[in-house]
Length: 153
Image (cartoon, rainbow, N blue to C red; front, side, top):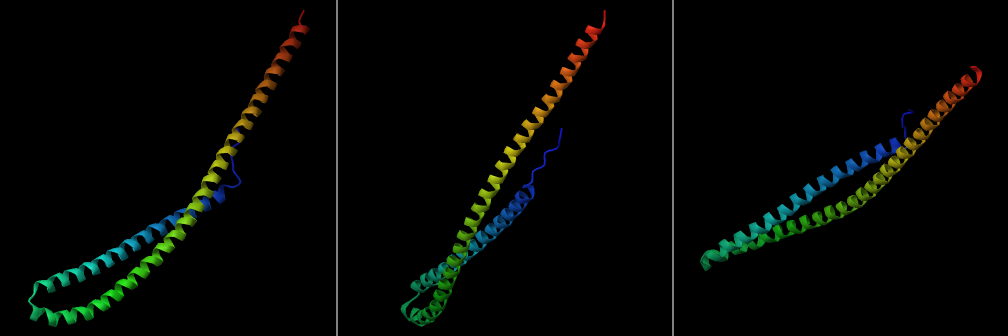
């Protein structure tokens, strides 16, 4: 039986490798998005915590520290805004990578389906050849038997 060899196997292999690379990039982006979200939450919690501590203090203590807090909170708010912009960029990049990933996955699945169909076609052709060979062998054996019967008295 002739060994199955598919001409597009290299294309399938490359598509699978590209899909794995994009998948790894997606995981890296997901990790970066998580880290940025955690940093935003950490800074927001820090602001709330300091504000809650200020609320517990007496008016005289609070006024002096409140001015300092407000100055620092402006800087922290700018940093949170920068992190939110970074988060939006990362999420946009993830959306693009997801679209690329889905396209590659579709290509891979199509190529795998084509390979399966080609393998099945190859198997059927090999079965036909094998059957034809069996039929020919049986026909020759039958002809020899008939010939030997007709030659014997």
